[in-house]
Amino acid sequence: MTTTPDVTEVTLESTLKSVEAGEDIAQRISVSAGFDEDDQHKIAMAVHESLINAVAHGNKHDVRKKVHLRFRRFDDRLEIRVRDEGPGFDLSQVADPLADDNLLKVSGRGIFLIRAFMDEFNVEKIPGSGTEVTMVKRRTSNHT
Image (cartoon, rainbow, N blue to C red):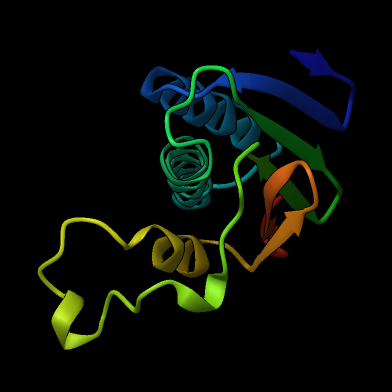
C-alpha cells in the first residue's frame, strides 16, 4: 500500500477477501477525512460494490489479475478509483434493477447503489488495462 497525505493506493488480489479489505480501508479513510457516519457507510458500501464488480465481472475471479484501488482526498471531496484488469463492459448494457423483470434477481444492484450513495460516478474502459470506475463523495458544508 502506498500512502501520501492525500493519496492512498493499494493493489488487491481478485478475491472476496480483498473486497472486505478494500471496504475496511474505505471506512478508515472516510473517517479520517471527516465524513459523518452516514456518509462513511455510503462510501464503504460503494467501494464494496465496486470491488465486487471488479473481482467478479471485470477480472472474473482470475487470481493472476489485480484490482487497483486509489483514494484521493481533497478539502471538499473524496475521489475513489477502482480499476480491474478485465475486458471491460458497456455501462449502457447493465440491466435496470428496478425493472419488473429484475426486481427479484439477487444480483445487479451494485451500480444502482453506487449511484445512489455517491455524488459522481463514471466508468471508463482503459485500453489494455481493464475498466476504471471513478466515484466522488462531496463533503457538505457542515463537515469540518
